[in-house]
Image (tube, rainbow over the protein chains, first blue to last red):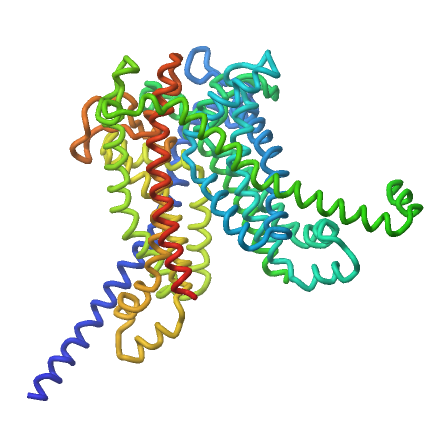
Length: 305
Length: 296
């Protein structure tokens, strides 16, 4: 009887090992899916862009100043789209960087624990609100308000899209900067206080210099986020690819162009269809470079203490 | 420099007082900066509510899109959103948790696992519209799933997988190591330990991450426009292979029309979308509170 039970147990133990292996393999397969995703993204963007660049020289694409891909005479200079992305992102950063940094200073230097526990979740909600809602804000609230002050403002303009995008990415700046500032050792701060510094002085002369790499990282990651933002610019910035840095005018961003083509009936396989892959490749590379720089800076800060 | 010279000539007491007044003033400035974005947002949300609430009625919730604003409804979009979230959850949750378990408990710490982790954090930063383009090329064209809910859900799964993996990894990391060792000491195998000791402890944290990821999926618009979800769907989708629309696209479509009434209908749809978003977020907060209690 006892022997039987023992045998049964040994049987189970022996059998459970291959099962454990199988589970490990299944888990590894799921983890490798992320590598597969990256490879798919890169290869599709490269392959489709390659067929595009066989028809349009790379230099004409990168440095051309006219973007008319859908109607003849065609012209594939991407600079107007880059300018659109640049001007909306610049406005967004002019809003998000000062406000985000001040928020980070308040949360890490002045706020009590209780106030932090109220403000931080509120800011988190701010990033998560669907971007189509922000686009609606820009189009139906900010633009009419701005129009009272700037009568020559176009209905679709880079300014209000940029402002709303800036409000949206404030938490990106504030949370990463706050982490960096909170990570500055207490000793440094207390040393400043002992020398008679106020919190303001300690913040600007000790904490911010010590946390600088993290703060710059937060700015870079915010720029990357602004580059990739789609719905706000598609709804409020317009769809006119012009090479301008005038924020009052209607512009088109790289993301906005992709949306425009997706909504239209551009035939599959045509040169117009291929343009979205070339534009997407450019966008992918720009955001990837920014993200890598930003994340390296965040890590670098961590290892210096 | 000049300012400092001016200060030196003043009595020391005055300077110190000035310093502290400046400090106090700065504190108020930073406080204002931290809440102003939330205040602006609250102001706009109030504006949206005033614009849209008159259109919110039973007819709006159960009707289909129409050329006439007073007859327009969101039922197909609402059902489309629910389909999308359920399918996305079905794909992304098991894969995401499995990947997180592998990376935290099985993979040897080294170059390869660093590479995978770096890769995942980079994937989390890829603009959502790029996922839409990949979905268009792979699911819509190559696998010929066409512009169906299935294509949308697969695209959305790729988009939220990195988020689920990262938050699940953090939840698993936070499980105390002694639970793990106690279970092994009792003779459990590695998988039994993970299944019965680690995962239950990490569960609230994992759920929080999943809900926040799904809240993102419900609001994403751009990738679904790219894969070709349509805006004017009168038939309610019944299978995963049907064409579909979702609430955000319906909102985008209505908001882009010139008539004032449609902008108000869009506002009403935004109210519904934000309600869904807030419900999901509130659930996540409840789970997070649970985690915090458990860790204490």
